Length: 475
Image (cartoon, rainbow, N blue to C red; front, side, top):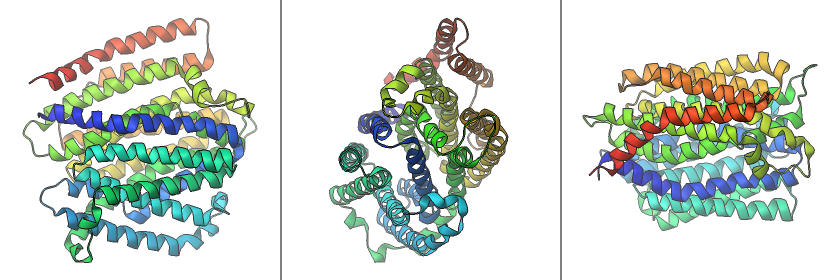
């Protein structure tokens, strides 16, 4: 099986396991919008972001190290799993000891009443990540895909029970995630027989040092991405403006404006799960530059086409996922999604380029480019949100991801050179941004012009997709 077919096969397996489950998670948005008011929805989103903030810090980003070292044949898989598990345990213990300090930070007041649940949420998420990433590192992609379906099914069931039946709101959401993650971890531990890979005698101090050197620079990187999303919600929730409406309700609306853009993230997550494995395994191949060029070109084209369709149909797609009958405030959610679609597109491309840093072990570069994006996001939020409100946050997010993209596309290709069509990227981006303006502003004839721009994007990108398909089908 050639490298293109292997990538396509793994992507297909992950797609089977992830697509239905990801769509199911997005459909849960209707459950949330029908049972949780905008203010509590903002709190729910803040707690979710806070968990994602704490996770890489107190697990030392070991999930990334497990993939990098677990796929490398030079390392014993039992030592990789045990060493990562021990480091995770120590980090999570430190988190519990530090948790009283959360009360000293004034803008973390949304944690009040949820601290214990938040700590358990992070611990179970870490346990699931440890097991699932190791299963992937072992090459058990089918089991990894099955677990994706199982975990989401459990999440759906627990959400229905705790939110729709018991009406526990935010607490019900957190309990649903905790129980689904715990179910997934136990499922993987039993089916993959992970007990065979865990033993105190397998702990390797030298390997721990190597894994920490690889993973620690990724901690700020992951945190920076979380801050980018976290700061948007914080600014919208706590800033004052005489021009636009801000506050808890606005923060809740913004949280659901990411629903449609997350459909792009679904594509990215499926592909990146397979691509990250290929990037590591093909790191020493002679034709890796050509491999990167072909895959990147097709991936970028797919994202531009998918984004074009989502922006064109954002109003109708939002109606499917966001329930407006209970809370009329959710009716304007679709207006803030188009720019976020373009933002997520570039977040996906940023993630692709980060695989170069992971494969070549230049993770420090990943930190610096993420740092630049986060700082720019904070500055732009400060100036744009008081003037443009929720739309200002969307624009700030797009511009920060876009800045990171250009920094990485220049820097990352020093380590793995591959051809990149910058003009084509600029044309596609411009077309998408004009479509955003058309959908938001609705000028005369906007439907016709939006359709024309969508056709233009398809025309500019279909060729790259066809070339990669031919590579996959070539024997």
